[in-house]
Amino acid sequence: MLVVTDHSTHAESNSLYQLCHALRHDHRCGQLWVASRGLEQNRAFFDGQPDADIHASAVDDHFGFDATGRFFHQSVITLDRDLIDVILVRIPQPFDPVFLFSLEAIVPPHHIINSPEGIVETATKSFLLQVSYLCPEPILCNSLEEALAFSRQKEIVLKPLYSYGGRGIVRIAQDYCWNEDVRFPIDQLPTFLSDSQFPMLAMKFLKNVTQGDKRTIIVNREILGSALRLPAPGSWMCNVAQGGHAELAEPDEDERIIGDILTPMLHRKGVVMFGFDTLVDDDGRRVLSEINTLSIGGLVPLQEMSGRPVLKRAATLLWDYITP
Image 1: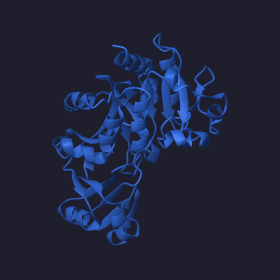
Image 2: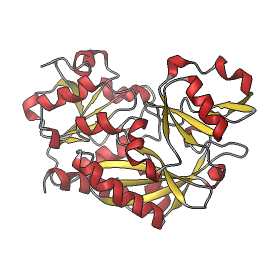
Image 3: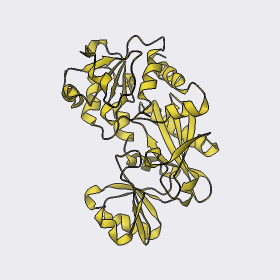
Image 4: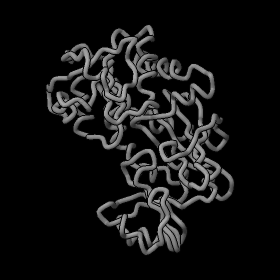
């Protein structure tokens, strides 16, 4: 198995390292390598150039996070493409469709987790419009004028189509606006939001956001668990990267229904591993706010909070998909 990632974007909490160890220790794994977009010598490969050299390192017992990225610069070999049977994609936004589809020249799409076509279709916020009935009134806004018109009907949240961790989110009310977690008078909105940032996905702002954003992780049709991410005092943003904190949770009936709808839909697109987030709407029921199919976080905290072997189970389910 080859894991493609970008170590230059990693933090200590990144679950890639523990997941790689779990994948490596499964009896079906012969060898596991990692190739990073953060290495200059991998530029041609991550640009999607045909037959570009792949510079990778074999995962061993010493593989772990290091702020300097030391592991990714040591023991690097030029990997023979013929040795690769499976590819696991673990790169953050922004992603390059050309690179993703170039992986199909190495292994077939059903041996890429998640499949390039599936990622390209689902890793944009606009995909939520396909399941709009599960979400808090989403619409696609193509300009600041459209967003302001929508905000006159109800308070809204604007999300860049390709972002993660709460980056670039804007909230618009009648008299105030928020650039991520910082509030401004509404007349200051054009100072940090312009037409060049559109299109963006708009959703109704839910006042019950203080009850938390719940992330549920699914691998090969199985729910691994859920974590409730609560905002910091005085904040409306639940992302841990934005100061929130996580607690162990369980998916409720509404979330299991959401999972039952999303899982077969995404599985048909080759999306084997994904996370979905929910918020509490004005009626007290959880509704869909995000789907993450690119670099799914939360596995390590889920294991630590639950005491269950979540990473080992995730690895088993991924290998089950590849070797049914």
